[in-house]
Length: 280
Image (cartoon, rainbow, N blue to C red):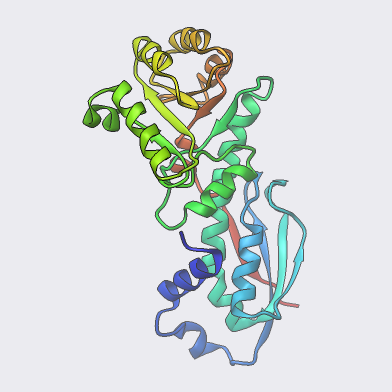
């Protein structure tokens, strides 16, 4: 996974290429300027820290004045930050900073809508791996800013035995047993989650044991409640599949530990923001 510096470097290289000729042609190299980040719709702001790092990457002496912080509720017409730097820096950083902040703010805003709807229940909202390649770290940060919880960051930090793993392996029991053997032999301290597609699957997992979380995939709220009752406090539970703002309360009422919603990332609509020159 790219760290933040590597991400910024690669993203700027993609955008600037051999040169920002619009700026090079029209603005003196030593020109100084100021710009403000204008908020044009209501929501949860996210990506402030990343935007600041983008400007500092290009010009360590950039001066930021922050009027908002990540996670703040914001409204149309407000100002998020002001930046003073070389005009070449401002114009190079503008699109990358905006793209990141708009995307992250949209995710944080949608995540917060899900979180707020079930705030009276102990159930937590989880994200998924349905993310934008190479931007996952920042999308998952936006989920946290919006009040959600990250699932796994990738294939390496948790075992998830999904339907295809189970089918290719030859069944739930075999998949769980072979996974535990593999983890022991390789001294890997990873949690195991197993996907189930029916109440019968849940019973089979309970008979085998040796897992940490049971996913209830595409269950109705009624089926979820039955499964949660069978599992009790033995393992964490996760409802997944077909869960929306319209039906999420019905799932939270079942007592399930987590509800995973891929839509908080892949259906999020970017927030309308703009970076405008401040001419005194």
